[in-house]
Image 1 (cartoon, one colour):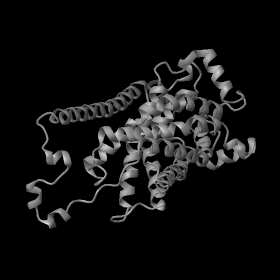
Image 2 (cartoon, helix red, strand yellow):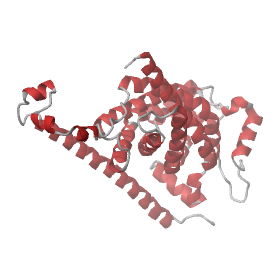
Image 3 (cartoon, one colour):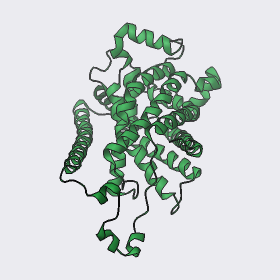
Image 4 (cartoon, helix red, strand yellow):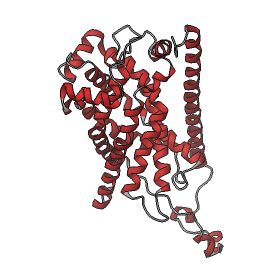
Amino acid sequence: GRGSFSDTESAIVVGIFLGIIFLIVAFVLIRLAFVLIRLAHKKAHLWDGVPSHAAYCNLPSETDKLQPQKQQQQQPPAAEKQPSMLKSFVAGGVGGSSLVFVGHPFDTIKVRIQTMKVEPGKAPPYAGMMDCARKTIAQGGIRGLYSGMSAPLIGVTPMYALCFLGYSVGKKIFCDETTFRDVSNWNLVQIGMAGAFSAVFTTPILAPGERIKCLLQVKKGEFNGPKDVVKHLYKTGGLASVNRGFMATFLRDSLASFFYFGIYEKLKKAFTPEGGKCSMAGSLVAGGLAGIGNWLIVLPIDTLKTRFQVAPDGTYKHGIRSVFADMLRREGLLTLYRGFVPVMVRAFPANAACFGGYEATIRLFDYLGID
């Protein structure tokens, strides 16, 4: 039909899509290899010679003493001190809880629009975001918009704690003391790589959590809460069924976090006055725009993941690759951006709340003198 693809065309598009994914993964692995080589090189130089007494005591050498005072004053300003891993972990959990409370109603609408079945010649179940919201409220009241929230709240709070912890660990691997002094060019790529590393920490929690959440949102009335979903999935397909969509979730989140943290740090630096700190308003705006940026990139992957996670067992034998080919053949390429409006509407307030909660917690720790 109009806007659909033949089997051959679908295969070509799938090949191109997988090729792009392969290049992204290859770049990440190559970058990680270079970082490990650089760290090994630095370690080797520690044994090149014995430091002098001045070096041990951090005293200025004779050469340093001869340097003009003006040159010493021209040293670039020190970068803002990065939070410790413990502070990042706790503050990330607060940010995750804030994100869920603000963003879950929009997520419910997004999932329902993404997973609705469109029959040829018939009007779709939902004409758009507002129509979906109106029908959801009519069926279950305001609580209908918060359907399935317990699962992401239980999962997202520790997941975002782990996300920001993973980002903190990633900064130690990919970044150095100069990275946050000038957030541009290669430094921005280093920050993105640190963000992508956070997916290693979050996917084991997020993949099953989103599987449960999506089933509760789409198949309303079939299950009596998250525990019932887990029992059903484990009984019918074991742990493999509970974790369906694991690799798709990892792919989505590593790519999303690359842009998420990169955009946030870039904008936060832009909103920071010379010699000062970024205001809470600046952090909120930077967080909201970072959320929009990362969803613009990964929404197609999220659509494929969601469709795969809620499909009956055996529907897609080759994971999101089969989902991709089926959606292109039946509904066209633009269907990958189904749910675009609710995602974009949700992205700014939810992620502004996330980074607002994170930064507020960090500032509270600083105020209390907790390192």
